[in-house]
Length: 313
Ligand SMILES: [Zn+2]
Image (tube, rainbow, N blue to C red; front, side, top):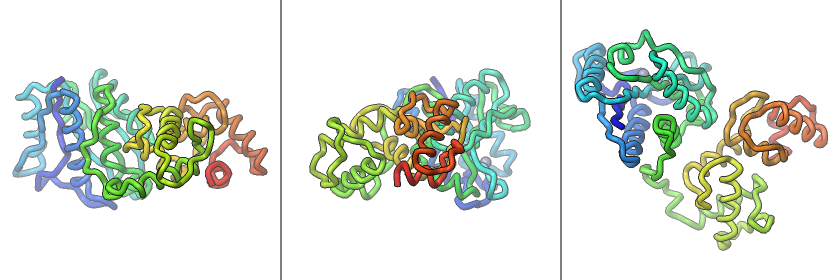
């Protein structure tokens, strides 16, 4: 497959204002990761962002021209939103029905990270979607001026979701530099053991982990168990996806009925012993209410701070 990847802005005077973060920085870091990951999956990538432009209009024209000249099969423009500091979440624009289908697939992957689902939207007002000859989508990953979104935002996870949504293939390798802490295996292992104990994920014998950095085999079995629960590849190795899931749960976000929470809802279902499907429907709600009653809480079915406290401290 030949993708045209358009890293939004980054071409003065085509730049955007700063929120908590700067849109140009985020489109660049996510875009470059998406390009590397698509290539590592064997896809061809044409980079559509021009190196220079005289006006914003010129910048947009050049992006479309590059996609059209190279006859890419799918054009993907990567952007971040900003509004009033309160708006948050992910939206993906498309025009054609094929575009909408791909937009939905990407959106569904990104909202699994915990972002609010703003939906697939009609992009017929967007220059780059109107002026590219092939199927085209424009992703507004999340809001640079939203504290919630910027706390959730992780470039590697965002890029993985986009690539998975585009290709249906989970990216195989990490192309991010390894964080400092990973260079100290003892600290990392102990942090992992602590996190798994807090989540009450036991080893293969059903025992809590000793936080001793020694029992790697037991920790591996607990990691595998956790990966199965949250629905990611069971490698026994605490990779970025695993840590993302752990961190999403530890963030103790409020979970309500019909909330598409992915890993968090799957974890809740595991703890409440209902079928794990990642969707907080009526059976999960009933189990939450039962858990709340038996722990002296108001049985409202909303997993808020008090319920989280009882679940993971
Ligand atoms: Zn933008």
